[in-house]
Amino acid sequence: MATILFVAHSTYGQEEEVTFEMNLSKEKLGINERLRVEFTMNKDGDNFNPPPFEGFKVVMGPSQSISSSFINGKRGFSKTYSYILVPTARGNFTINQATIDIDGNTYKTLPKTVEVTAAVDKPNDQKTVDDVADESLHLVAEVSKGNPYLNEPVTVIYKLYVSPNISVTNYRQLDNPTYNNFWSQEIPVTKHTAQNGTYEGKPYRYVVLKRMVLYPQKSGQLEIEPLSLEIFVDVPTNRRDFFGGRIYTQTSKTVSAGKRTINVKQLPESGKPANFGGAVGDFNFSVTASKTQLNASESLQAVVEVSGKGNLKLFQLPEPELPSSLEVYDPEYEENIQTNTTGMEGKVSNNYTIVPSFRGKYPIPSISFSYFNPNTQKYVTLNSDEINIEVLEGPTSAASNTPVGSSSNQQLVVPTGKQFHFIKLSPNLSPIGVNYFFGSNSFYLLLFLPLLLIPIAIFSFKKREAIARDVEGNKIKQANKLARKYLSTAKKELGNKEAFYVALEKGLHNLLKAKLKIETSEFSKEKITSILMDKKVDTNDVEGFIALLKSCEMARYSPFSDVQMQNDYDKASEVISNLDKQL
Image (cartoon, rainbow, N blue to C red; front, side, top):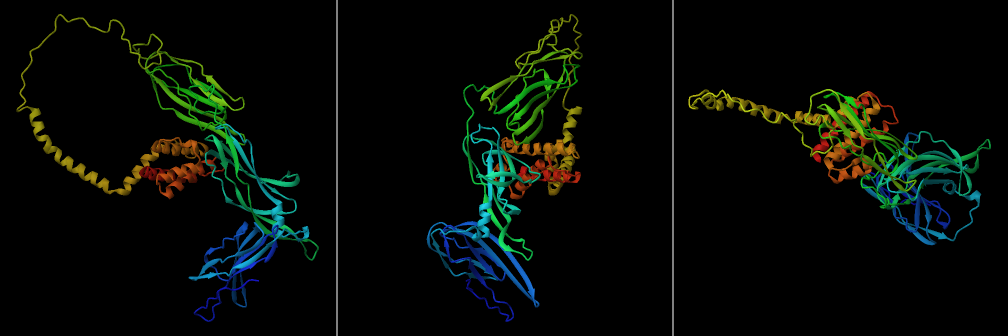
């Protein structure tokens, strides 16, 4: 059925002729049947271009198969590109030329005509292997909620349904969804355990292949892109071996979960508190102090904490209103969050270090935190308890006898009796001496000082020039400086896997927050990649940055050695230095 279209004559008489041919499984078929098209060559080539397959839909392919052999000392080679097509209408259709480059020459196949007739009866014993596989495999994306609120978790579980008639041997992922407009996190599937279920009322076995938790970041109609897989299966045939056992044939099939659309509801405006910061879920809120009595110059810790279930990584914690007379350091952010099929659960907190300088009483007023509960569809406002800090020993401030408020406009009051002093009756005045500048020590110092500065200036100039020439050394210093700025906490936690990767991830996000003025924790890795590519950041640096974020995620579930942690720290220093030059 196949024809040889071109023959390349080698300059050497002993070299095998090159062939490139197209084979069809049938030239006449019903509209409910499948057509297999194979393009076969006896020598490997490049730039294979298939025809457009007008009148047909490609349901599988291209799949490649290569075979080689040695017979009587002669090497044999064959490479085949295979497609499975289904007709889209009745009539006569032409499968046009395919092309490929072999040894600098272009080879083409001749067009072939296929007749598509009305549907034909296909008894079960006449079904092809591909027909059986097509009917026995189904990939389904189960979405937990089709109409969620903004920032309410949505779980997507991908299940592969397999008929008991066939057996799956392997699979590979062809197209991975990007989950645009969602904050996403994958929940690893540790075991692919087959379970019994039903699909369209028929008994099937199914396996959970992938689980995702999505938090929609905008309202309206949002699409979840399809997941596509190539599944390799063993399909029983009607043939039997010598012992009577059924013979199985292996084939592959591309399955897709299809696009899913969800309608994301905007949070209601009615009853929205003025201090609402985007928290959605069910939370608890507290402000606590490590101690309420201490001496001046001692420190205490004030912790603002939100715990519960919801979008814990996607909102800002409220800030306490502390008295202006207290010295307060920038807070340390901590989180302990687990993500399961129902969403994020755990706690986040800001830890403030406070150092009082004077004796007295200092109140920390109550602050509020608001969130939206999608279960009750109402806003909830929680208030913390007021905390009174008492400094027992230390110097007395002007306002130490009264509680200190939080207003920055308050003035320190000077105690009575210390504003003025008595006028001295005996001033003990002495005559003012007359000093001349010319000829004084100051005169000669100013006269010769420029001469002394000349060698110092020359030495400093040469030193700076040497430093400027040391390009590699400057790069190392700059990288170390940035590493200390963004990775100081991670460096302290080297050897402690969980704490190290939490600090490393925070440092990487803080870098982009400082450079791009955005909250990168609200974006997925794909969104961060898009932003960096838009900023013309080098592709290798973008890939290195994303690889570090993936290492931070994998560290939650996989063991990491000290050597690997050190390598990730060194890589982070290099990536931070490169991004600093480009942003």
